Amino acid sequence: MSTGAAGNRILSERSLGGAAIALVSIFALVATRGLDSGTFAEIGPGLIPRVLASILLVLGISVSASGFFVKEAGSGEAVFQWSPRAIVFILGAVVLFGLTVRLIGLTAAAPLAILTAGLASKETKWPELLAFALALTALCTLLFRFLLGLPIPVAPWLIGY
Image 1 (cartoon, rainbow, N blue to C red):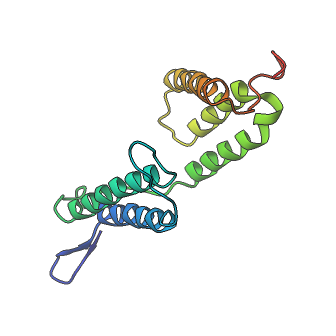
Image 2 (image 1 turned 90 degrees about the vertical axis):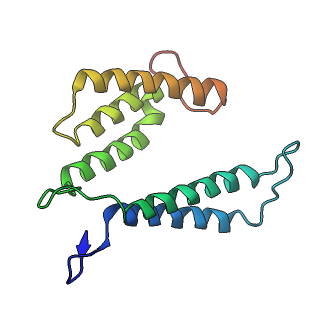
């Protein structure tokens, strides 16, 4: 948060975050302007992205505006701190997943990536993270392989696909 000479708030993290959300939604609205919206009976390829971008725009403006009315954390207390550890492990988890999903399949690569991302925080509760990794892997396998029919290897080391 920045303050002026008289101590008035100029900008807060919340107002910047809301503005970023609003800018992303404006980009989506501009990017989808050439797509046909269709009707609710026959939905075109541009309808859902435009509706979601419009909702996102309203939420972004709301979050940005609320940043001017909500007090930030107490003086001297950091609202957010950059952590090199978090950046390394989160990006590392994404790269690890990309490198391993074709070799060992989704059922092994996803939990491996989630557990690697868990190293980003010193406050990680490993039993909870393991349960989350297993549940998310099962959900992703069900969604991407079986419901959407995407050709993602599930467990080539175990079942051959």
